[in-house]
Length: 397
Image (cartoon, rainbow, N blue to C red; front, side):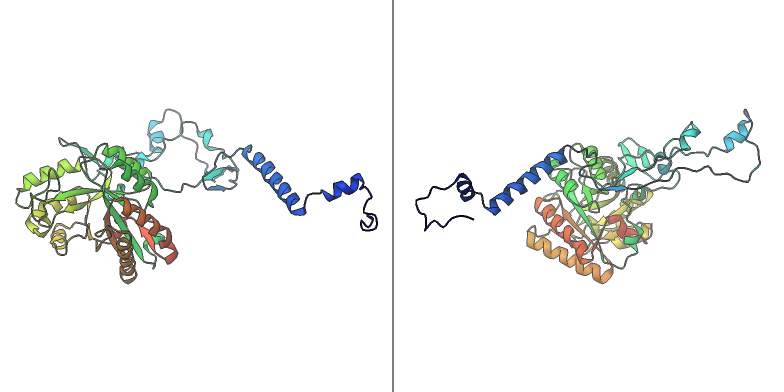
């Protein structure tokens, strides 16, 4: 026990008393200990091997393969019996898109006898689409590579589409499909759209950009399905000119088909086409007839972008038995954050009333930013985002 300093004010303190008086506070001691724990833990963590850092990982145990015995007593085919041996090998059509995705059969059957257990599966945050072109749905012509229906009946509209899950398609929740056009002209904005927008957002590329096939395949690798923008004659042409090879209402069928095939040959990998402008052209059934017949023969879809109040699209499409869809809302007709948000809210209301709603927009920086923020919260409100091709399901074609 320490002495009373009032009774002995001149007494010199001992060493232990002086050290006790200078002891650190409990709070400072706690800070030092906590910092030491964090530093030691961090040093340990950075030395640990993390081969899948940044990727969602699922670990599971796969049971070893078991030998399966059957009741068959038939002997194995004798060596040299080509007919029997050939019958066991199925024919593979090299033009079948599905066959292109299948790995070649292993020559060593013993390789299929064992399964490694305790494997790790990396779950991709985006579902990549195969690079284009795919040979089975590609025609080499004097214009370049054009889409076609394969020998087995597969259409580019299916082969190049991003498949929506059946759970989403048949869900009672409201669904929204959005297409952004004008991609490929500005590489920086195109890369932002590919990287920052959900894979369910469909991207439409203009036919005039540089390195279009490279950009399209980058978008497909990011999970986005692709449409091609076709420039159509607007009201006021040529003062208002969409670009070279614009399809014109008064041009001959041969001239428009020639222009159309040139436009379609700029890149491969699109499931359908969407108009760029076209106020006059889309009001002329006679001009639409050969265009829709060409799209039908090549297994493509047609989307009208919703920028026109009236058009002859639906009537001409029925005559050609072509799958068409008409967007109801251009989300960035007024390119301001508030106006785009209001347009997206209108799409939500339409989707709740009709089950699905289709909107279009342009690859503007403000549109990309606003759409990205909206998409993050849409799922929490019960909205399902689907690719544009999903809106065509159940229609004629």
